[in-house]
Length: 125
Image (cartoon, rainbow, N blue to C red; front, side, top):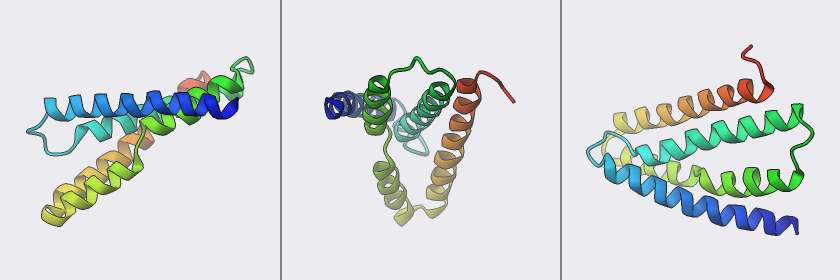
């Protein structure tokens, strides 16, 4: 049964990532970087960190929900492989742009995870 929670969450997360990423990238087709990938990774980093730190302080979050939403949905919603591919594709022709994309993705993702940690713990510092 646990595998079904992960599978169903993963299916929803993958479809959500595809739709959101395509929408953002087509809306900002003139953009300097692929904002769709940055968006899903930053939002996913925040939500996973928030969920995990909230689950530490609140014992009433079910393990089934964590498997469905944390492991399944957010695991499929975020995408390191697309980030790596996009970075390398950009790097081949525009190394400086690729480095900016890399730094933005990592910095914003960690910032979002830290914010999720603080909010999930229920305190700012």
